Length: 232
Image (cartoon, rainbow, N blue to C red; front, top):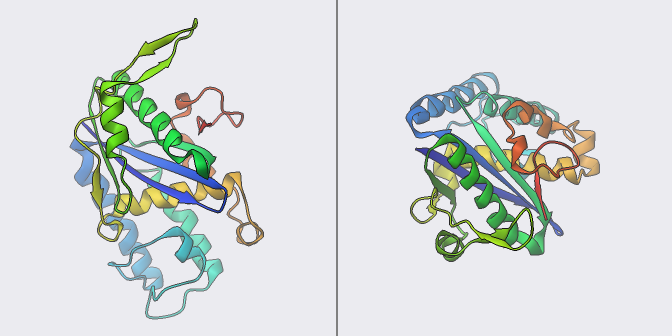
């Protein structure tokens, strides 16, 4: 059994998803790992343990995050360290998707198909856990029953999502370090693909590459960057 934590990051034109895949048997170890990072930045910078670390606000310098001010250059260092820490989660793999904002549902569908394939390879099942405020239930239910995909030699093949169990579980990101971690991954992908002057000034345009060794690069062989980023 695997748990898959999903979040997105968007700008006016672009949508990105990141899905962090973790073995359920190692969930407590993974939680302890994220808590250790939070304790470390509390000790070094005073960052509140209960703070929701949302990438856009964190790097934008917004919010009461600690008893003292943490300047943006320090926030950038912590952001990169957070990604490096996520990449050390036990037996973690990350599937990513990038496309136009208008293609959000198509991106999610393709990501679900790659999660399905990943579970087939592992001979496992997955439960999807997403941030509140979204609803992919009807899509996932349809794909569980009817999911035609293009065949290699033409035509279509029936590939229902039998490896994804239950409806998507929605959680308040304030209460989930794993969804916050997925948000950091998705934001790093967004700015890897579409860097802004502010992100370049902070030295974070390539921060997504901190996740390199846990990226599921087989998720999409057509990715020109050879990082497995699903595209449509």
